[in-house]
Length: 265
Image 1 (spheres, one colour):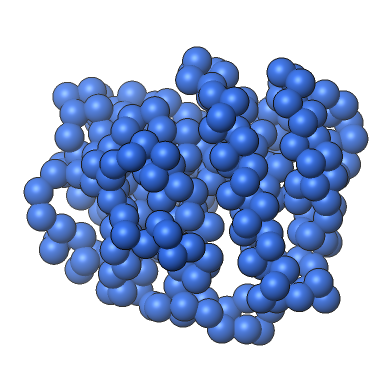
Image 2 (spheres, one colour):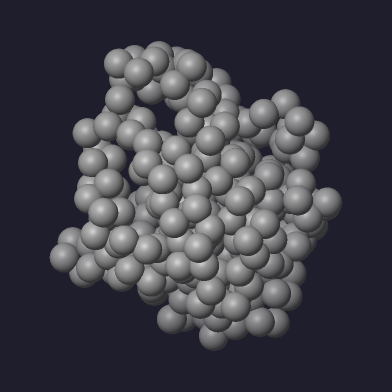
């Protein structure tokens, strides 16, 4: 936990002006995810009225895109626009009295970055929930001008603040032409996916065996230079174990909770 928090602080210090103020703002996320503030990045781009969740996606994008030398100011601003729309939908549907709920996460900015960098045609995510990551992936595909996403979840329902929604309810209509939602367990649904894929992100059941099974399926089906990503790698040693046993995977991103690698051959 200490290392995780230190790394997060490091990302903030490397990304924004006035990091101390930003760290205090981010620390209030669990009590009120609807707070707003203005943040100025190291390159002097200011994002106004940003919430803690949206800011964390921006910071992880900013840090990792610079580390991988693929930063784009246009992409940063697009990520901010997505965050504004998501926050608006959360407020409209949940109300200001429900100030703390699962919101945008750091992985969403990284997923957007990877989609923009690797320009995939066929993408798969397991685990949809409200569709935070789905929205960011589809937005990056739309910005690329190509590609489609298959999203898999075992149930077509999510509950937030005691209200029920369809899985992926945050995804806007204008992005659904690139999206196919499959309601089925991933160990069944993946075997119905034809041919090769270019991008895979795990965010379903986080047991070690389930994660390893999904990683194995993805690696067999990934094209060369395809990307394998996983959320919640801190739940067990599945990611580290899989990475160490497959020499054709080159790790690109490794945060305390999320990682991604590319297939070299």
